[in-house]
Each structure stands twice: as structure tokens, then as C-alpha cells.
Amino acid sequence: MKTRKQFLWFVIILGVLLFFTNCAPTKTPLPTDNIDELVGTWINPDYSIRAQKMVVEPDGIYLAYKKIEDTTWTSGTGTLKLIEKWVDSKGNIWCKTRADKPDYEVYELNKISNAGTVLEYIQDYYDYPTEIDPNHLEYRIYYRQ
Image (cartoon, rainbow, N blue to C red; front, side, top):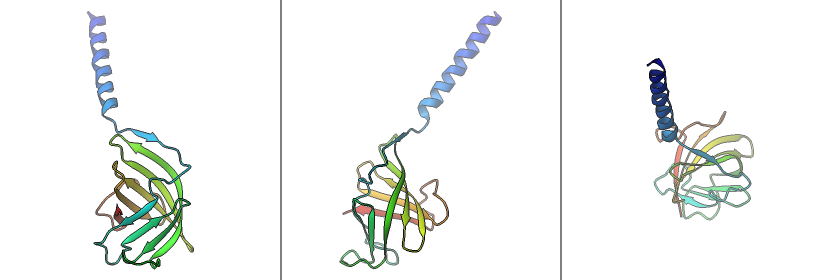
């Protein structure tokens, strides 16, 4: 009888562990030899203080434009360095980048929607953010043009 109880408890615990393992979010690492998912033109016409247009080149150079129609960058430039990249269980691509600006560095956590059309990110001046929080002061959202 004691053996049956132990076996039953073992089966229950194993079932619970398997259930929670299958519910856990997946984080599949991706190669960090390119920033292809970030390359392109990203816009947000709703911004008035922040840059309305960001252009990311394949070599990591990015240019920020105050207005979408601007042809000369005015809001900043720098180089993005890809630190880590992964895909989540919903197909969204996440990456940690460091933006090397002329006088300082910015640490970013980026999320590109599974359709590749929405870029959300949080930036910090001391360390990599751990989550995307739309209420954060340094939250940004752009749409692929």
C-alpha cells in the first residue's frame, strides 16, 4: 500500500512539472551576426518631441529624424551593436542592443512584432532593461514604413 501511495505521488508531481514546463515561455536564441530585423525605416507620426523617423542601415548605423519628411538627420546618430537576439513563443523577435553615440552609450531592449511591422523598445543609460513597459519614460514605438 505504501508503494502505491509513493507511486501515485510521483505521478502527480511529474504531471505538475510537465504541465508547468509546457506553459513556460520559450526563448529560442538567434544568431547575433546581423541586425536584419531592425534594418529599415521606422516611423511614428504621433511623436512631437521624440524623433518621428528612425533609419537603421545594415551596418548598424542609425539616423534619427525629427520629422518624417526630413531628409537630413537632426535628432541623433550612432551605431547599434547587437548583444543578444532571440525569438519568443509568439514569434516576436527580441534583441538587446547597445547604441554607441558620439559621447555616450545607450542600452536597449527591442521587440519586433512577429509580422515585422512594429518596433517597441525601452532604453536606459546604465544597464539593459528587462521588460518592455509602455508606461516607462523611455518607451518608444515605431512602425515599419
